[in-house]
Image (cartoon, rainbow, N blue to C red; front, top):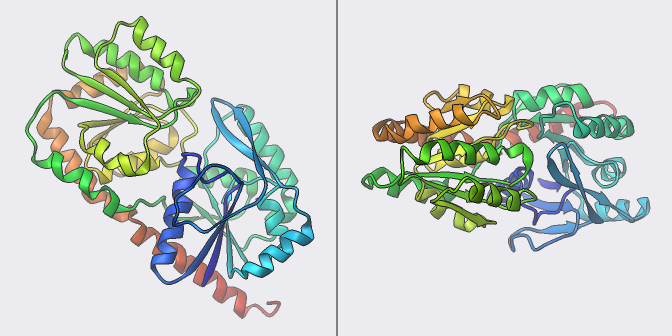
Length: 378
């Protein structure tokens, strides 16, 4: 089977959808399928990816997060020739998608068409844009054969804008990549506790509240450390906030490569995910699970749904620094509790391994292909 994975953004941008595409691509190749990625041009993705860049990404920021919208100048004939040359059995589009790249490929492709819906959205500019795009995509949506959502939260958003029924298959992680991050922690003695955040530094990620929570904690726990991995438009303002609060032991690492993440996670004791809204699943939570870390997270809809299935991790109201401080203090003061929850999380991560999730996706492809082959109009 040959699968074309389609993402409007470029693959060099850090993001959960890019990680999904990368993980699924590698699973397919490992299991003797063929795969190709159609995306915007930009950056330098991993060498093992076969990438076909189409168009230029135009940056877009709205409702506290940033992405890009692709500008594709290729003619319909050129796109048809490209798709004919690649001869994919399945075209798997990451959604929500734009009418300028993914939508045009859907209109020109004769392959089986599958969507994976990745986002949750709340009132704001992003919701307005998503609604407007859905109206423009009526014709291409009619060509979709099957829909996947990474969570019930994402499925609800997908139904609201795109309609249809969604098959729930979660995000995946490469468990082997993260295994080395768990082993050292389970055997090392207690030292100063490190709280870790990894992600974009943008408003909706709630890092401001984590820093404010750390300010509440530092007097009581002077050896406590906060490590912030990632970059984004709020970095300078967050660094100023640390200075204004007179905080010590706060470190901004900037962008952290995928290869460096296991080592960083192995050095931490608690993972904190304070995003206030618009999280459909939370791949970073599963990466923390795989690394054997207990999690403190803001109870946005996606994080709350995921952690409800994994008791022992702590949820707090979004945008509430005092509640966040209280939850972190609970874990700081109870090393044995941290250890037990981390071990349970490490075991729970096995259900999200790409070797499991990728298999579910391939079975879904095969089911849809069989239905299509049996159809009298095929």
